[in-house]
Image (cartoon, rainbow, N blue to C red; front, side, top):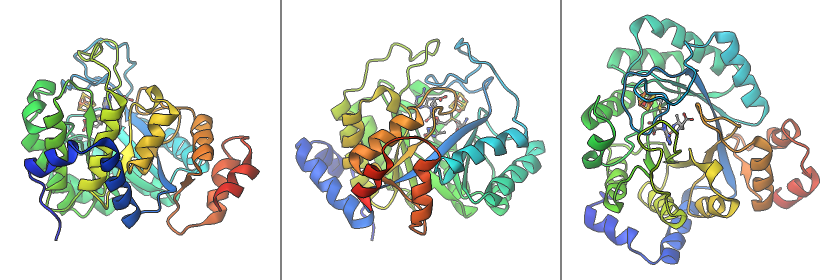
Amino acid sequence: MKQKWTLEDTKLLFNKPFFDLIFEAQKKHREYFNPNKIQISTLLSIKTGACPEDCKYCPQSARYKTGLKKEPLLELKQILKSAKHAKNSGSTRFCMGAAWKNPNDRDMPYLEKIIKAVKKMGMETCMTLGTINNIQAKKLSNAGLDYYNHNLDTSAKFYKNIITTRTYEERLKTLKVVRDAGMKVCSGGIIGLGEKIQDRMELLMQLSNLPVQPESVPINMLVKIPGTPMENNLDVEPFDFIRVIAATRIMLPKSYIRLSAGRKEMNDQTQAMCFMAGANSIFYGCKLLTSNNPKEESDLKLFQKLNLFPEYKKQNLTEENNFNLNATKINKEKYYNAGI
Ligand code: SAM
Ligand code: DTB
Ligand code: SF4
């Protein structure tokens, strides 16, 4: 039976000496995953900006002057072009985000059409569209949506300081709706919002103690966007961030942990320690939703240095090899010799 994490257990975990924590996380990671493989997802913003919500970190909220150009729902042709590029670069999952409080029922048939078309290309699909109801969730699931992303972001207590236009309970309800409709759950949070260490613990307890743990857990480091209320937040100490990754691995041992936003601001060593602590997924491609992500080529160089290989479901070596052929001219011989 899965362990129910209490605050007391979680505090003990977070307060472990750093190397003991990393060692424990590594052991858990190796129980369930190949530590030299990484899952690769690519993001696309299919509807950008003018969001009615007031999330204080977000460049897409209509309340903050971030200079972001708003865009209506993208055309299918454009979405499929991006999905094709993602697939050719070696990504196995295509995640589409919309700056909505919730999808409008009139957009549902189009969303279903997008899902079917991306699935047909042979990629896993993920969407993040805000709050959804039972009927919408069932429609997305029936169209073939594999994952729904909906982050809790932080602890229930601290949440009110970050977002006032919706509640933590609504967020939890959407996670239940997604699960009940048969989709995989992707839910995580952000570090660097000004939260206390205990808020980080409580976020992980919330995620870990869900009736079924999320299959995918994105851990974002705040990207400080000029014009948002969080633009001058203090930097997160990298070792504190790595500690969160390690605790996530221990508390959600079978989940994919995605080292999400903020990688561009991290050096190679910090990212490597995150992978060592149990992160085994990234967003790949030079853009997240609206902000920058490391260039494909620099990620490939990092993978090469760490002998990390993209994960393909059927361990398809041909696809693994293709991963780099399409994307870059790095020293492939050295790369393949190192890992296969
Ligand atoms: N509008 C939908 C929602 O909020 O559920 C989906 C898109 S929203 C941009 C997806 C997630 O991106 C947020 O829940 C948040 O965790 C993350 N995010 C947004 N802005 C960020 C930032 N500046 N730094 C780090 N993560 C961010
Ligand atoms: C998640 O947890 N992080 C991604 C994805 N899920 C949708 C989004 C990060 C957004 C960073 C700010 C931006 O690019 O707009
Ligand atoms: Fe809107 Fe999502 Fe950004 Fe919040 S995080 S402002 S809901 S796009």
